[in-house]
Picture 1 (cartoon, helix red, strand yellow):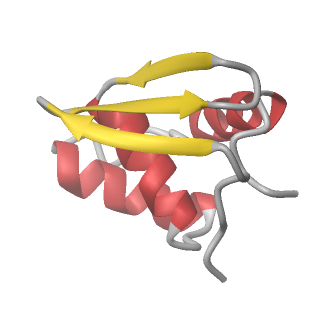
Picture 2 (cartoon, one colour):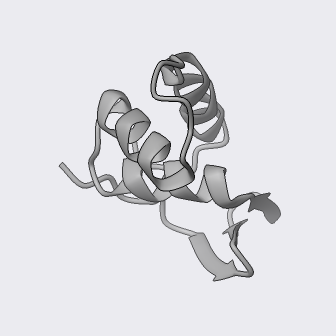
Amino acid sequence: MKRRLRDGIRTAAAGGELTVYDGNADTVHVLNATGAFILETHRAGKTVAEIETMLKDAFSLDPGKDLKPEIRRFLGDLKKRKIFLP
């Protein structure tokens, strides 16, 4: 299931980073390539386990390392900032 950004949230990619503008709070968040990847794959409806696998492949990361806690923490931060619709 695809996840929608909350109304007032705009994104723009540049130089491997993703700028997230929250027009409701008048704030800007700049995500590095890893953060941008997680946001976009989550937005596409991928699970944490799927994001982990895709992240390891895309960034040539250690296949044995458990990234799920870090991914959950990052997504939790996005939730606190109300980037996605509930």
